[in-house]
Image (tube, rainbow, N blue to C red; front, side):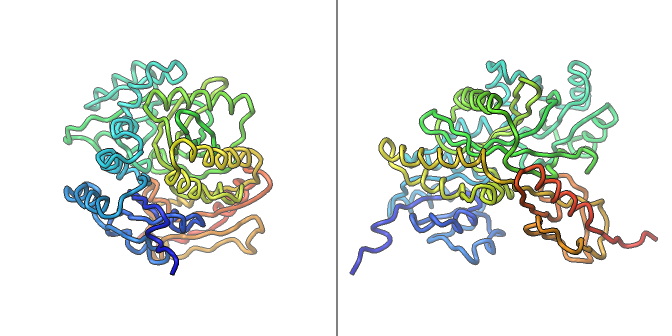
Length: 417
């Protein structure tokens, strides 16, 4: 008889959403213990891990449970997938001696005010900011730096309560609707002018490789200024000089923040020669961005993450570096892939009619709500009610095709009485 799977494949613990990871072709190289929330159970109906723990990340019993599994069947590495699981996962991994970003570095990225403080030494990221505790604090900050400003929770997830504030009226509405009487500090930042990009990087002992450059679009007109992405495309168009400058900026910044290894998703704004960091997290990007990169290059970044988690430090690094270099070179020359999200006006939607005939560029589209159903006010990413994905020779053409399809979709609403 051959050796059992347990004796020949390494064991990885994954904190957070792992359904796409388990669907990747490299999934068979490892055995997985996945920690995810109970309401995510259906996500694993098709691709199940060897062990699935459905519980809250803050459950006090989780560290002991993972430690007990580790004693019986040792983990080779830990992978962090979801924002809410990053600090817990990094803390548990450190306690077990598993290679992972430190809990301190992860917390510094998670708390945007700590990130800004750490980056103050980086002249290229000299973004004015302040922790504020009141409407008067927001107004005083805006008077000092001038409107517009961005306000957000210090640990915002999925663009939740991230707003662009144009004037005192906006600030008053934002504070009274969300924070008045709660006694919480929030972060106020000078609005960063420029073109918005998301950068997926992998680092190997401080050596940073750019895996994907994603152009990101916002529309502050939705949701009373909600800073929610309405669409993205790859590859994002930058010059070779800009690409080199991005790599240098992120290499310095991530080193300052204590991130020397593994994946990182960093959003930036480019304005002329200025490159400023909006936010960063030590994980793969969420949403549909990995799928866009796959449509563009044919390469699944989840495969790279699995190989990174399974590598042996030293000799194993070089194999994964070569795979990352191949993806880096392919992404800049890949075909175009884009997504545009549905963010219609709020109300009770009675019927949705898609454009016919469907254009060849549209790969697929989906509406998440059943009709009749409610389209919500857009305040965070999960409020978007659907999407259209398009492909073309270049990214901006794919984005135009997806946008035209979404904007031509008709929503019929319940008549107001």
